Length: 69
Image (tube, rainbow, N blue to C red):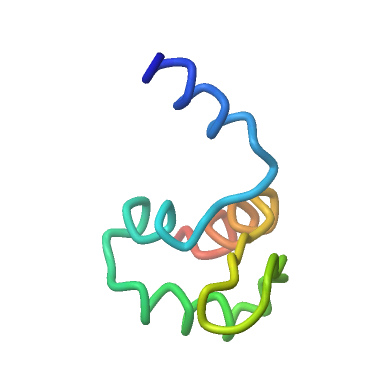
């Protein structure tokens, strides 16, 4: 079951801030700052402090590709 959950996450067109924390190995505040400066679009579900934020996977991957030297 854990494997099928991971497969679903890999196929999702969205990424959570937590996934980016693990992927980039940085703090959540850094993810928020990098995303804001890079102009990554955010999908907001819910409202206020407990709302859910998701980033578009394609935009994240394009940003990462643009940062390669």
